[in-house]
Length: 200
Image (tube, rainbow, N blue to C red; front, side, top):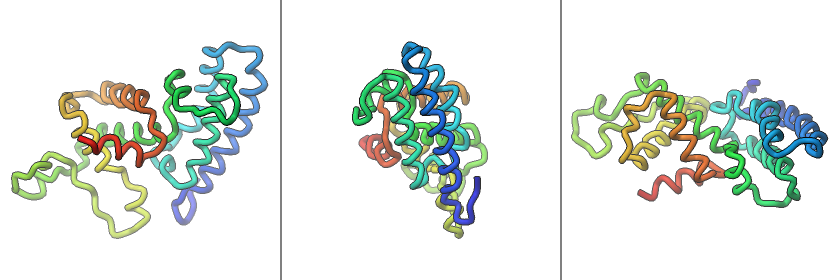
């Protein structure tokens, strides 16, 4: 759902409205199902809403509301109080937090469409350290700049995993590789992701 400012407020409102009704369903059926079945239900009625179009709205300021509701769903699955920290619960159930879903979708999108991006080496002839990195697309329009794929995220991810032959992975292999990494680290924000992969 688009709005004139492309801040995705209408989209997040819609997602949260859907999640609210599904959380009610999850609470009502919890006494009758085991954890594994509840997890399956979660992926059917909640995760599906969180993963639709996340590449566009998943890093907006308002997306935190949907993330809070996702945490509530994980707590319902585990049957723990509402104030219980969720990071270990996400890992236990192999569920990507919303920020990680955005990171995953961004990285996979760029890897899948790598031929559409330009490297620094193709722009200039200097033998620089990051000549093989993708060049960040320039934009004079702020809306386009805010909503463009985060190419620098992909570059840093490849540098962090420079010991792996990522360029030789197909999209399916790369997606699994990224998901395994994100499930292990379980980032709660894109900034947390950047801080972690910038250490090397």
